[in-house]
Length: 117
Image (cartoon, rainbow, N blue to C red; front, top):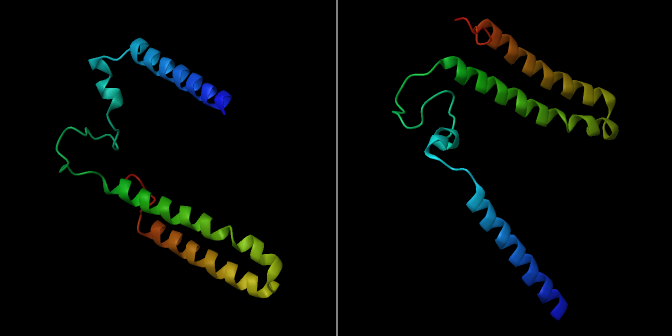
């Protein structure tokens, strides 16, 4: 028990020395303020938040979220293939992918994928 408490004291001492040295030796200056500020799609976070931005950023984000969720929903379809009837699995997979393709076709018709508009 004494040996464990001795090791804990040594570990705490070494970690405190390392933190103290990193604080002393780090190069912090006023010029690093820009590097420490958050980056929000090219906006200056210290200015007004009520400036217009391109709708394409929003549309691309929605498209990304839709297809990101799609991947999360397609993963369980693969293990289900071994447990259910092939035709049932094929109908469900075809229906799901068909809905996604219809959504992609609608986005294409609405020129959401065209950045030049």
